[in-house]
Image (cartoon, rainbow, N blue to C red; front, side, top):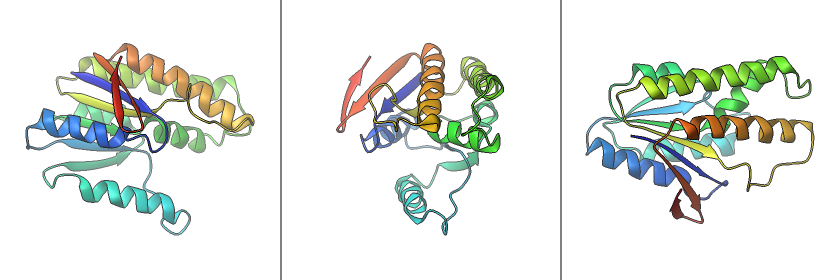
Length: 179
């Protein structure tokens, strides 16, 4: 089973995804893939607090992998997998390319190659995989170059990943709509 869970910021999408994986794992082990680098506590204490809260509510039987190579983490997992979040992954990829202000075909190609690698890993995986992403079609995205780049690239990534999933769940205000 492959499920993409999408919604806006603070919609409850991660909470819903965690519940799905708890059910899929049946109380046993699961792999939580934090899709991006660990936050710098000094640089962004609010983000670090959010990550810590997520860690604290996960079952102790779950292992955590913090990586930008989400496809490799999916391939390596033998248990149900929760990937949270594709927006964070995208941000890390564009950050690493130092491409926020210099949008180019090369950064698009880099992101889309990563998305295609993730899709291939999803299709090859024998594990259940639940992925979390931001719904940029409904979300508020700043109207400047980097905001448009994020929205456009994540929209394409979401479409490609959704096409490889069995289900897509939209979460709005904690309510789930299965698409």
